[in-house]
Length: 231
Image (cartoon, rainbow, N blue to C red; front, side):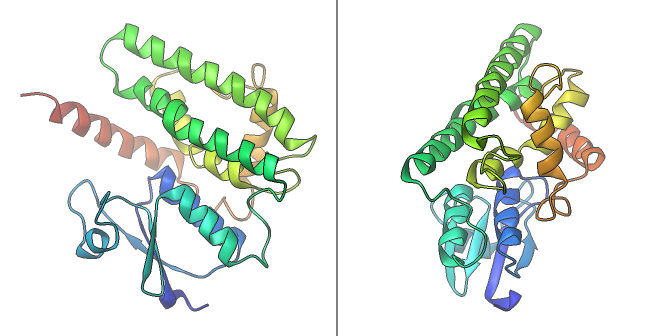
């Protein structure tokens, strides 16, 4: 399919946009990436394509928009079924992968970002503890889901790999900015190796944001968020 038939509205720092990019890369789908500066303004195309949430990412397939990162990943997997499978074929394994993906978005990532965004050392300490507890759970989940292979999806990148792997850039940023250890070889050895395997994968390495660049963006974002809360 020509890239002019497939457009992805997104922003380079967004882990949720990264999910869509990795899924499209796994399936070798050409697409046009349309950068949105949502912190400043939202394009008419974005507002038209996602009038409910008005958020990125939005995948536009022909004239039809698909919204929400995990829904986009599932859509890509189903439409380009001839490529490498992203979701597990077994119904139970598929349900488990979806469970952990929801946990990441609802519980784990908010605790991760709270390490940077929270005011006060006590709040940051609580957020760090929650994030580390989550990684301990994910370390156990990896052992069960990977079945001795390199990825949550087994011998290839799967749905849960994309869901968690999209946050790796921000994990590195927070480790630097907050001077903390999250994915650690001594504490989470499976996730540590998985991080290396995932980040070096052909579908990932060219779209994973550079850490230094993401650090600079995060400084701007934290200042903007905290500044908007002052009067």
